[in-house]
Amino acid sequence: MTDHIRNFCIIAHVDHGKSTLADRLLQLTGAISERDMTAQVLDSMDLEREKGVTIKASAVRMYYSAADGQKYELNLIDTPGHVDFGYEVSRALKACEGAVLVVDATQGIEAQTLANLYQALDADLAIIPVINKIDLPSARPDEVAEDAGSLLGVPPESVLRVSAKEGLNVEQILEAIVRRVPPPKDADEAPLRALVFDSHYDSYKGVIAYIRVFEGSFKAADVLHLFATGADMKPVEIGIFAPGMKPVQALGSGEVGYIATGFKTVHECRVGDTITRASAPAADPLPGYRTPKPMVFAGIYPVDADDHADLRESLEKLQLNDASLTFQPETSQALGFGFRAGFLGLFHMEIIQERIEREYNLDVLFTAPSVEYEVVQHDGTVLTVDSPANLPNEGLIAEVREPWMTIEIITPTDYYGPIMDLVTKRRGIFKKQEYPAPHRVQLDYEIPLSEIIVDFFDDLKSRTKGYASLDYQFLEYRADKLQKLEILVNGEPVDALAAIVHERDAYHKGQRLITKLKELIPRQLFDVAVQASAGGRIISRANVKATRKDVLAKCYGGDITRKKKLLEKQKKGKRRLKMVGNVEIPQEAFMAVLQLGDE
Image (spheres, helix red, strand yellow):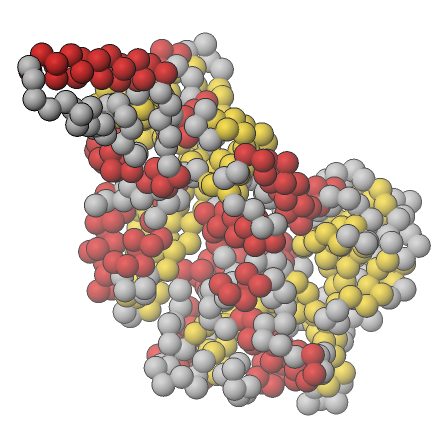
């Protein structure tokens, strides 16, 4: 019977106390002994603890004796907390019947809170609003309760007020989950359908799939089948999270647990896939499965060319755990051999970069991130281009389409002007505004992805003193006047410095980049010309002056012709040197492309 099961998740904006609340619930229900208790138990990666963001979803089973004398099985499915992992959040929500909506009493409702809330409402979940951090001196619980109440259409008094850090009123949340979250439907007799809402790689048991059983039941000995990949497997073991992995004999409808599949890569068992029994399969999979699509692309190169094989190995190992990371080999004249990698977003890229440097001890250089463009040629063929270096010749291109996003910015009304200014400068189009609370405004825009991937978020935070929050979704590909901005050093194009820019920005960006490169490229024994070209013509140029060797030092006294003869000789030598000389471009130059903000 499923009457005593409750499946729920916690949704919140980054840093609103989601992981701390999960810790308190685990402590209260005795799922973790005091001895094993650490802060943020469910965030197992160091990076998650440092950045205060849950990167991987996880699940845990707790047993709670409620006030009505019954014992309930509560399955908490922890969701990732950043906008880049929106698809994983949607799968985790699908695995629940209820959601605890956590709002920080000092910050109020933010963009991510709203985005996740709308996803939860779409998935038809029972929402339990909770205001956290009421112990802080700057907390405004009454005001925030008013906002949350009006957003959900419930009286403000019904919003629970807790302090997860102090453990204040946390028991009320467990009671509310038991009372307000509906039990899963009892469907043990139906054909098996279980949703994979996350997976990770274990070096002994292969891929561990985190599953929620919707219909049917299965035992450890059954042969199972995956819909999307078409693979069959006999589980190595099945079990539940308590919070460590604990093997069990069988899992029934409504339960949350794991299957150790024995698969060698996460690609064979993707998030969102449906598992059924191979001998009596279900007619169709659970809806909503899609393959995560990378949005941001960057080149990854080892600083030391000898590390190329180690870099490949580290990327392969990261890919075992993270199916949304894609990479393929590429070469660059300036940087040598490396890889072109695709990421879900800029935060995802930052996480991968830190993991390569920390876990595998490699020094790597990431090139400026770019997005995937669709290029329509005159003969009608459509190419997808994720690196400016691969853009075909201008004469062949009919049009270039770039990805556009819809973004939601939630901010106090005082910062309306600075945000308008920021977004319009970056080719954003204003769509609509709403007021979720008296002093907060939600602004909806459409904006090209290439304009928000580098420093948009930092700029937004600094213009609003950290109060604004951002959420974004992919909208469509749109054609625009885009062209390739190339940098030539000594007449040679440097592929790693190329970028695809809008026609109206090409001149300013080219000029700013040349000014920066002039300072960064070290002086050689000959003059070095640094040029920017766009649309088939040179738009900016600077010379890096030669360092002079004092050839006249030994030439004192005598006729002026002696000096002239020596200088002529030096001039010829410099001309010859310029033909064979190689200009070393320092690493900072590649980073300069990233810092081309609106100075």
